[in-house]
Length: 423
Image (tube, rainbow, N blue to C red):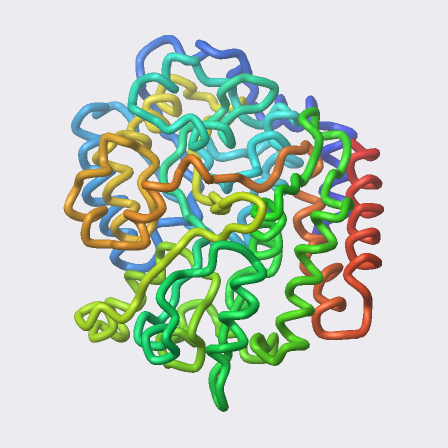
């Protein structure tokens, strides 16, 4: 019988311990240092990145090729998935006691799965192996303990058309929302929106504005939503104001991978990720060659750059914890990280890589690395995997319909409190 999402969550809540010891996979523990012994055996890696033929060649040929030379007694099977399917895949594996040995997951995902005992604590010394920015490591922790290592970061920044700014006589990028709204109005013309905040995920866009407005998602202990205050309401209201001005249009958002409004000239500014550089280089290289694109970090009460990305963790139930730990460490080496970042247009989370040709050539990545002190991450509660799915359908009616920003945020707060209460 097919398990639906609700039954999976129920199964996890009621039987995590049983799931982790079922099917003969319970030889690992969640304690740090539980990977003693030789690295050997057959293990599985679950990954939502290394997409397409190029990604597969990078992972299985280059990255795992080096791993096999160092660990000839370890066989790695790769299970490719997408971020859209990753949560359900992990949840299904956890409920059935069949988790992959090594799991790559998103920022904000560590507390929920660490709280469920699904992933193993890692030795703190791994956090000091490379020169990580402190903020880069924060999403890898739960209750102060290390459970994952960062592989690549995906930052949310504002990209703009320099030529549009020049034509309008705008000499500097907006320093706050008041300036952003005014500039967006000034740049809006027939067939062109001044600002496109909607072509990235609405959840991540609203979070970026929330953080730039000085707001927070949750309390430090993860047990109370904090986004229900004026900072959260103002962040959503700003989208409504842009739409009312005519300088943003939710119906004109573009799909992932399609030429963006900034690329086509139908938008002068947009919220996007560092990966847009690679897309533009492939689809509209003339925009880079003619220096028509610029980027800046969103700011209002403070500068804020949402830091998403992919982390690598070890299953707490691996039959071969030494092999799994070895692969976790290998995927987080500078060489492995740089390859993954180049393939996706992502930000490598190591200072060691800040002077590489890749970083210097990709201006959006370079900007992101120079502003990691302003990076803020989503998540922060063990109930995040449930709450994150509620954000877009709860906030969207306020943008496309008549619901007030205050009512939409209040409803999201109630949903978040209920989810936290079930933990």
